[in-house]
Image (cartoon, rainbow, N blue to C red):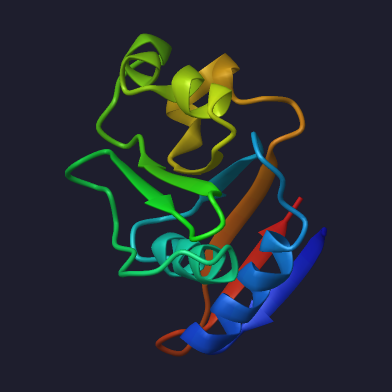
Length: 140
């Protein structure tokens, strides 16, 4: 799924995330790029719901990594790399282990992972528009 989409609400953001989730497979990496408050975590909430994750999905800003299992055994790992400085730091929080377990990684601030990000990673970029929940979301 590729394209540029304009959404005007949280629900529309979740719906777009559900469309992407239908294409994800174990081991995929989803890079979430955008300013603070641009909708990255909201998008992950939509991914999680589509993947069958029960419970609340919040930003992993302070804990760096949150694991979300679904009833059918799929694993969504939400990472916030903002406070990390190097690829070694990213490896230390379990990047390779999660991928070996078949997790889908949703990664905020992916530039901190450097060369660890695979060439075929899905890139989702967020930009705020006029209106409280209005966003431009580009998926490539």
